[in-house]
Image (cartoon, rainbow, N blue to C red; front, side):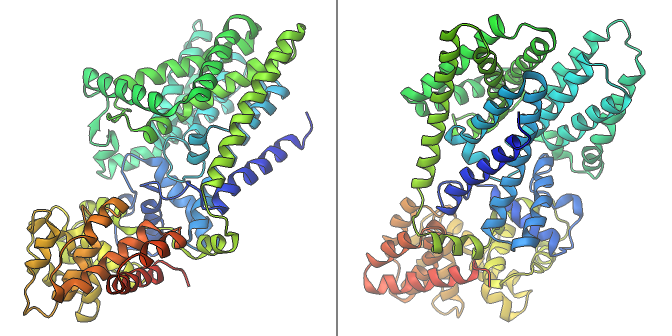
Length: 578
């Protein structure tokens, strides 16, 4: 295998992933990506918040790692959407490089090449995950690959203390990064103990355990700092209820597969299973390869146990999260398929060789189609797209602050003062800070105004735009009633009307909600300000689609369009990097 093979595969990955990014395809704005960028900015801006509280979620060590990795790209290209995508691409390149070297070491050069091609031309879901820098399930497969490789070398090759220490570090830090690392650590530990069953006091095992303890140091520090949530996943303790976990997991598996695998998808799925089964029975026969093959299959089995019984599922058949959480299984399966196809291509029977080539061609063709579909689903205007990538802020405060405010000390005014120190435009940061602080409280709108005025009259104007949730809840979700309840004599009433428009329905900017919000019969005196607030939601919905925003705005009545456009342009300027 030429030395240029891996660099060429890495280059191919960059090109393949750049296409949907430059087209502004469907690889942006997954719920946690931009809020985690707000954590990066909190660190860079030096907010007076204890460092261990700045993580997006305490149990997401990987998220905290990626939050820091994003600092590098923020420094190089600015805190833009492009920096967020470059962060994701960095981790994807690392995963490809690590997987390639593992495949080459255990299964040969051809298997490594096949693995690399299948990684680049992956299914649509995997291509999307590889461009989302959330630091969760997809990025954690890097540690799956590392632990698998280092563990296999410790179990099946004579390696010294240094190799065992390195394995322990990978297991420990990988567990901090993602609890899914335990799913590969268990079969690796079993394999090592089995091969050393006559020498359980082997001092190299002590080196491995020392590495685990040292690698998991960030996790120990997080727990010691009082972030007890680090032992939970979405408020569900691990192994909380076996029956409940199994029920949720079953729904998570059945619904996404039934709804998202079409004819060719099911064919590819069946082809993967068939190749893996064939490899286990007839292809991978020699010692070390067979052992690594079985070790990889053992990981899949342990992962399934974790998924069904340890809280990895969330219930509801959520398609995106199902495929995301099974990223490690996909990568393990791809590694096995690459090993099988490589051995089949080296076989003596012409039919077997041609069958392997046909199977590989089919899988790669599907990947090409998915890349084209992702790219074609974007926009054709390259110049405008690049401008949006470079000059749209790559962070979002609301989703991050919703978590952070509950981990901060002090009363609402004290927390507001700290968060108001974000180095950003007041019209972008202050409404988000106030909205996060008042969520779940029983404050009255007048109390919210008093809170905003602790910043001074000048900054209070922007801060009050975050009070929409108070009005929405006071009116029990009736936006029209929320506006009607405004006090005519209150000089801040126009700001409140705009805040109600910004908050809208449940605070979520969605087209179907926006249509209903525009149909609200707001009192004439507040109507323009209410629509101006809705302009914020128009921008958030069409953030990367200015043509779509223009089409939506232009179909409105002139007075409505003018007010919406004013709010839209205000928000666009606030979200734009100078």
